[in-house]
Image (cartoon, rainbow, N blue to C red; front, side):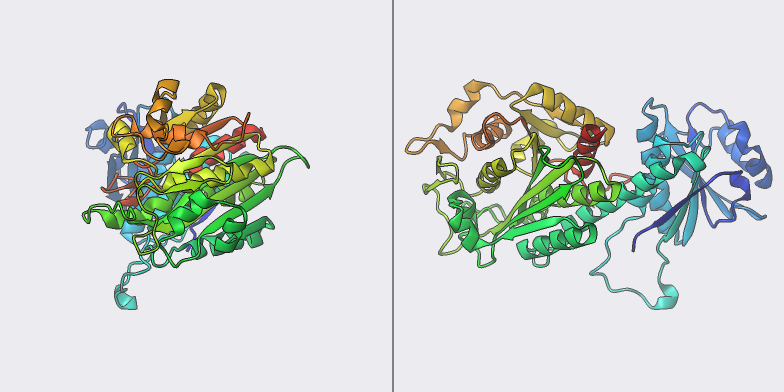
Length: 493
């Protein structure tokens, strides 16, 4: 159930709500504007700040229960010392939403100093992100014992009248990320290529977008041998999914968002170790990011043309699966020597990237949980970013920073290209242990339409978390929805 978020102004002490979250900066100064609220709580709030029981540090929180009128509880949430006010408010509101959901309150409110414009958007998005949870497959307790999920939230703004558009943008961002995280969290036997295709059609129906879905027969007609090689081991019908959002000028070149949609990746004949293989349901996170971004972009009605392209299948070992040593011809005519069947995402994306040429895109950004090497290089804090155009890369990195999904550039020097030269074909799908993230990106570059600026996002370390991240629980993070949306929004302004 989506969180209903509204906007109001006025004195937070007069808001009758089960929970009021108050974002405070570090530094030990209690805002004068909160004096009426503090008085209603017998001075407990300012005393907590003065005595350093609450310091306002990032991710810090303190719950105080009241007895009189106004908010029944106040949750002090730290904004920290960051100069990035948007990011600080987003994080604090996310934590507040998560705490509110855990408390079982149906309604809550959020206040922070001088909320208006962009920071209202940040608060709305944060509350939405924090309230999200996935419990579809858990047996629920009896109704009387069942915790009530957070259903409504109010953002208390300094400029409520002038911040309605910002609130709507925050809600749109939240809904886009909800869609992506839900797809990511679904098990592989539910979130199949057909399920992704149905989700795309639902988005298309909801926002009147053109959606085209190609199956195995179509891929054969399109001569996508590279994509089909990955799908050879599964009876599930592979899908090439195309979603067209036309918010810009008629005939203007679109931005192409490309996502890897491996709904489960066993590694194929080059099978993965059993330990941790269940996490490979997240190998469709790039595709989830594309669909979530399109949902948000359509809700925001951005004045730009966007085409989302997804290659989706599963990579399974069977009597019909591709074998190490096989050679296939991609749809752009290049031959590929398959040395490792677990390097399958690049085989799917090769044909999808080549297909994007039909739309004559102004720029291409692809996202994929592509290499374990990226996790070794950057851990779980940054997305690997590679490109054929440094200007576009700078634009994408700035968008990623704005969206709270930081990236880090890796080199694409020609010396690395030598590592993937084929022995009996044009190119091979792995280049050895060294520089694995870079050689994977260089493989993809071979299939990018000539002359089109392109950026590759390796989200293997950032799309999901194997531990609780305080503001986000263990599981899907929604990366790269915000990066995609912020880039498109930047082009629309």
